[in-house]
Structure formats: structure tokens, C-alpha cells
Image 1 (cartoon, helix red, strand yellow):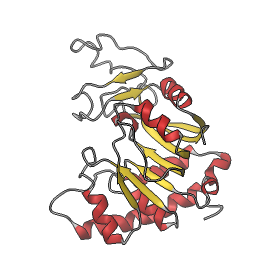
Image 2 (cartoon, one colour):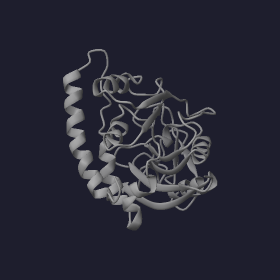
Image 3 (cartoon, rainbow, N blue to C red):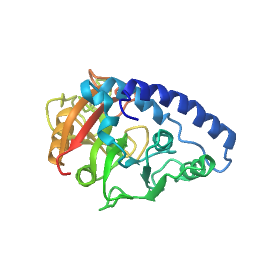
Length: 261
């Protein structure tokens, strides 16, 4: 897999996505539904994120282990396995969309050797292996009660990581400011290293949403938990993002290297 640019990896992910979607349709489990978002679409964003030598991040990994944390139905893990990498999954059934049943069913159908371990990231945790060359940690951080703990623990076990999370620039939209006892005024938070705690029904009526950071806060958090930022990019509403609305959705994607291992 040497000298594989992220653009080629993205192209291969599209082909694999078609294959795995067909497998899901064939299986069509009556007991549960598949995770509704295409996690392999993240490779398109990684293609936009990565610059210079980082575009060949595969060269950094060698034959090292990869872990997909918060894997949904495991599409990314199975894709990396299809490229020849030994891949593990860390997920938690109580917060997984279908309690990890989709992940396990696909593993069986594909004849996969991916190792699956149930891990609660909001407590002191151990990943399936002691050391990884790369961790995928995409779209998970704002669903955690203890993001500092998770990132600090990960930096002691993974040499490189892709991290993405929802970020904010304002506390509310102009239309929603003044509602209730909170957010009486719309405040520009962009340059302040703070995190906004979402109400249990505030964002998509999903009580598993917790902390949404400003970009300044995310960068500081990454530094304080042992990471150096190699590439950083924002997608979505990069002008006036907020923590509650679909129109105000902004995501930060990062390629990181641990200072601890």
C-alpha cells in the first residue's frame, strides 16, 4: 500500500461503499436498521483536508494496527481491512445506532477478521490493543461526556489519528436568541476557547449530544491532550455555525500526531 495518495484511497472507498451497501440490502435484517449516514463519505473530506506529505499518510502507518472508534456499522474498518490492514473496532452498544448488531452481522457476512471490542469512552478505557499506528475518531467527540479523557487516553495509544467533531462560532442563531432562560443574546464565540453544553433536546432531539467546541477550544484541547495538529480544515457552515440547527452545522476535521508515543 506504499505511495497511495488520499485521492486514490477516496476513489477506492467509493467502490467499496457500493459493495457494502449492496451487502446491507441483501442482508436486510428485520430486527434493526442500518446506520443511516455513509461513513465512507469521510474519505472525500479527508481528501480535502490533507496537504503535502500528509496526503500519503498511508506511508506513516506501514503495517501497523488501525482502530476505528465509534464505528457505526464498521464500513471504515472493513474498508481498511480490504486494503490489507489489520483493523480493530472500539464501540459501545448502548450508544451505537443498532447496538452493534449491524457491525457484527457484516463481520460475519464478509468473513472479516476485524476485532471488535465494547468500549465505554466516557470511563477509563482500554482499546483492543496497546498500540496503534492510526485511529479513526470521526464524529464522536461531541457525543462524549468526557472528551478530554478520551483524547488524552487515545494520544497514549495511537501515533496518528483522524479526528472530526461539530464546532460552533455562535451560541445561537439570530432567530433563536432570546428563547428561554439561556442564550438571551447571540454571542460571537469564535476566538474564545470554550465549549457549549447542549441541552438534551437542543440538537436534533438527541440526548447523546454534549460538548460543542469553538475552533479555538478544539485546538487548545488537542494540544493539552498530547496531540500536534498536522492538518486542520472546516466544512459546512463556516460563517455562523451554531450548536442546535442543521443549517448551522460546521465540522472540524484534523490529522494529528501524538507527542506521547
